[in-house]
Image (tube, rainbow, N blue to C red; front, side, top):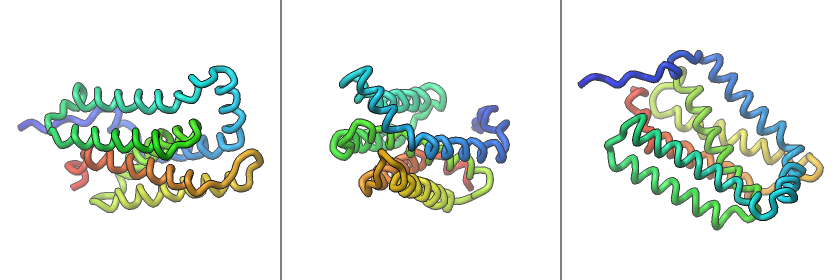
Length: 189
């Protein structure tokens, strides 16, 4: 059997650039905090109720991309990866429907799910074996907790334990997505 080639883009990005991308992403999350409320008011004022569905639309677009990636790019034939994709997606929909009270909270799922994938990607060249998942979780959970602590000190923002839960749940779903859907275990040996 011929081993699959890694995509050239994965090989060409150095460790330093991977961590720079993580740092820029985290800075963007933290820098956006003071302006998030005003931006959300603007979106709702301009687009009305349709603006409240923006987070859901973005999440479904990302999900559709990964389904396309699994079927056509990675050409996955393992039914368990698709079952895992479906279960994680179903959990995401349940969080969107039952936990996200305010429409702006829907972005937590996208932001922290993506953060867990980016952090994992940055750690992958340095950290081997299964501890990479724990390190990724610790880093994402810490960043999500600091996000809420910063909001405590900002005007027009407030500290909310439910938001910490959403950040952590989103990070956990991202990690589960990596483990059961993207399945990088073969490369971690």
